[in-house]
Length: 332
Image (tube, rainbow, N blue to C red; front, side):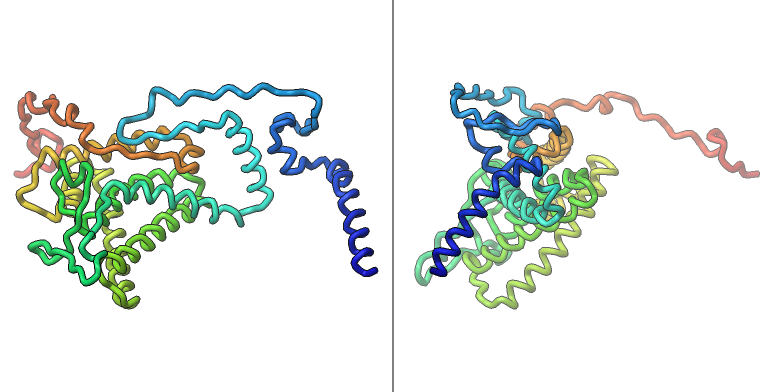
């Protein structure tokens, strides 16, 4: 009997729930997502109504844009034509839910963005995955891996943990600069989660490829990496403000480890890549960045730009005016 009473109570509650939703003027989430219903309206007096007797033809698919912002950074166009409507609805839900959902959204999107950063310098060490295998070493004593892509094959960098970290840092910096344009209440969560995903990936590589089983040892290296990240932010920010020469010096110290025999043309390719990538990210709308639809190219696409001769090379040097001529302090 007790179970029957509970069932009748539940049935009454279910019968009353739709009428309560209509009285309050709220559109149920299921009604917003069914394909047989009208799309949501931004007008306060219009709500979704069911039209079961009417059939709808499939919505046309919007073709991807043929003019991406840049070869270095691009975003993937949304393939679903109703994505903007659903995104607007999700935005309203987030506003009602407050800041509770912001950290979950930022966590998921930054995970995909970090994977895009890490993918640029991905490497493996097959020897350590075999039983009793030992990783080969570089002349400096680092574990040597196997990597593919522009940074290893064209630039000639060595596939090691430090190289992977520095290339990831470089791309993470590009995203960090873009996150600074987010609203002040939202940006810190995106900064923190992006760095957290790097820490998770770095710790996983330490244990998988580099034999760091002890948690204390991994934590020590993670602290060192965090200090390096803070230094990278300061160095690249300085180059962003003071010019390409300072930016090139920062890239030379971090990516090339201060190698005196560095190819200056390759160094210039990376500087040009950083500049154009930042400009492309600046042109991307916030919703595209927050949707995680960012794809990086490689600096090799800047060869034509770097090969151009600077106009300043043909201009004569001008002697700076003396202090007396410039209105400075005159001496007796």
